[in-house]
Length: 604
Image 1 (tube, helix red, strand yellow):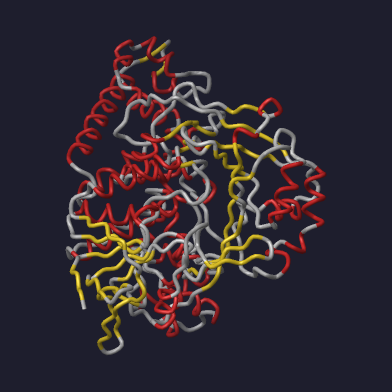
Image 2 (image 1 turned 180 degrees about the horizontal axis):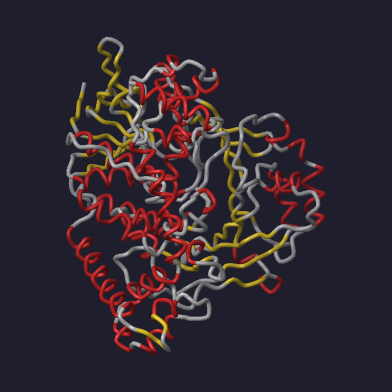
């Protein structure tokens, strides 16, 4: 039997897998990235876009930690927009349409050129485990063809491919993505190891031919006049931007859908698993929002060299004939030719309360999960988990402490804490409302929050860190100038906090500020403008940190606490919180439960 030895194995080369493998390799360990098809590395299975509300903040954080998603979209994007610009800076969220094929090619290029990383085409069919006195640890994986890969750490990023079934109306096909198969061996292996598996469902809309669209009946949605990059390595972008377009459904379409609900897998009983509530199928929209007489559809080009258009907002698993009839009734799309029909995918996932905050499993040492296997949805959420799992696996190999980001440090910290503490009952996606410290976690300051920590453990190189140091020096210089200046008898920083004051007003008073980079000027403006709000958030953060410092031993016996409710005992035992702060965030846990745990810890 052929055998190959590495420090870390990453299984799956989607958005989670590529970030995981790259992160581990940057830290300096030998990594093998195994995928069933080298031609689909980094493929965008669903919408051809990166970012969006809260998701854009995650991409900026991935980039600040040295990840590749931001670099790839900057190079291959065909339209860039900063969302929510009418709101405060905490809500500003970058989003970009991608040239779908170019993005995939760029991700693969970056992976192929990374030192310490081997990209291999293999079908994994088993997980190798060592069991010593009931304590399990991973030792590698077996692949089809009778070979084994050995490593002390394995990161599973299997996406929607575990026991996957695609649904279009009554038709069912094995597979996690159109044109590809499914993976059954890993699900069986995980079940045998004692993991709980459940089922989720996701979907994708039809793609249509741009040549058959009547754009005269649609609303144009252009990109920003000055596109802003995702990666902190890029100061500006030169892009030949393509427009997106907006169409609308109508009552005729809605009635057609209602008449055919019995043929929709989600309503016929063919699919029983939950789908993403915040990205519903068009069938769900018609049922849940029965009072609405129309829904927006965003027509998004999939690339410069293709006429395929993604119909965002029309995710469906209705039969082909119904999909054909729907388009015939939508103004501007009456003659649209469907190039790919919409479908739903049902797949296995592992509820994430089976994970530690490092994304290492509680059941098997050295085994990490990242991406949709944890019950999440979205490229950005997957990439973030992959980066953290890959980094922590590498740190484990090196005998170092894991990188755990707090809720006050990053959206990524919120994402992972939500998953491991609260679990999921529907596919998880990130929103700004999930982050209680979102004013601190803006898309513009991710490098200031995270790049220093990433540099300490080898996730980012010296060049990137030096750029951050130079930026911080600019910020300090500009801030000192403002703090030393008065205007009309008022400290200039107080003048800047007035709602009507903008940066140009301040530059008019201190012309030297005009020499600062745009990035440094923006940071000074936000830091001073919102100082009062940030100070209040810092007070709450300090309180939470005091709770976090109160550690809970790994062998702590919650059943030994008298008067603790049975429900609380069960939830504590299931989640195994590492500190009081995490314990207090578990769903259904009351302040009285926390008080009993604190009293018991103090007694010890």
